[in-house]
Image (cartoon, rainbow, N blue to C red):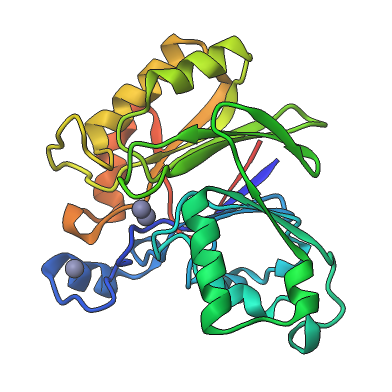
Amino acid sequence: MKITVLGSAAAEGIPAVFCNCENCKRAAAKGGKDIRTRAQVLVNDDLMIDWPADTYMHKLQNNLDLSKIETLLVTHSHSDHFRSLDLNVRGGVFAHNMSCQKMNVYSNEGVKRSFDIAETIEACGQVIKQNIAFHIAEPLKLFSAGRYEICAFRAQHMASEQALYYFIRERDTGKALLQAFDTGKIYPETYDFMVKNNLKADVVLLDCTMLAHEIADNSTHMNMKACIRAADDLQQKNLLSENARVFVTHFSHNGNMLHEEIEAAMAPYNIGVAYDSMVVEV
Ligand SMILES: [Zn+2]
Ligand SMILES: [Zn+2]
Ligand SMILES: [Zn+2]
């Protein structure tokens, strides 16, 4: 299973779109792993998690064939995770010789609403529309999509809709990814379901938006301490496979930390730090 973290920033990106803070200036000067775009993760070459406005740049940077994506999992409708209008160019006169005609999108009611609203702003052609099948993913229920078994979990993230994150297991190899952003603390029901269904992760991505900042129990994001706790909980509950790799991602510029500073803080806990275009093979 090949996992590519295409974007590792929170909503504003780093350097942030309109920002001139010291951290954004430091990141811009440093370049490399300190340049972070909006969250998106590719599994092998046929399953994508989230579709932000940066998707097109991710295609250019990573030389991707986005027409290979058969399954799109969307976490929630926040603009850094779903830019539905981009799907209007998936087919018809806009895309020839596509690798895969049909794409299945799994998400919640909020994302479906955003998808439907986009249609009223800029209607896409009938052929394009009929090749995008939208499904509501029910949390805590395993479903099958392409060569994967998937489960959506409820995220502590927003009031207006139930944001989700996903467990994705490749059927042939049994290798699995737990993608836990955007979310505050992991609900006990997630661990309970994973224990009950013997869902072990080989790679874990954890929301570390708040970095070293203190957070409240009802926070809609995690910080470094919460990520360390989540990694420990997964370990204690025997939900990590042998040699599993845990990473933090989805960083805010307000965290005021460069990549190497986050790495130094997480190293004692054996937690890696994601960066744009990072590839993990398990
Ligand atoms: Zn986000
Ligand atoms: Zn900034
Ligand atoms: Zn969000």
